[in-house]
Length: 128
Ligand code: MN
Image 1 (cartoon, protein in one colour):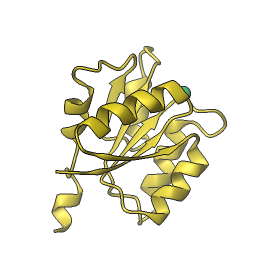
Image 2 (cartoon, helix red, strand yellow):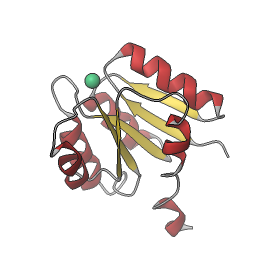
Image 3 (spheres, helix red, strand yellow):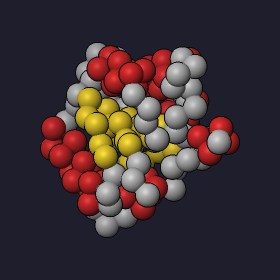
Image 4 (cartoon, helix red, strand yellow):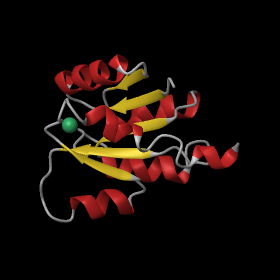
């Protein structure tokens, strides 16, 4: 089933790779290069999932997740954090900011799409 995914990621190469991998599975991807742009898009359109880079210039991913969780329009959309931080505590920080899951870079092209698909509909199905 085709899903609509919002990708908030500042690195152009990462955006290209993630979009390529998810398009290959038939999913639609809308890209945002920074947090404020991503939040604006998330308020305007209905997304099935948000992929969120934690390391963003300006507003970081944890702040973006907290903002999305605090708004009724986006509070229930699954958010998966994607980060190159390998430091202890980052996972907990992302989860406590409201992310539902956490994937570490570098992205494994073989398994990435399947990992993401596990998070589809976890929250939104409850509404239907
Ligand atoms: Mn980044």
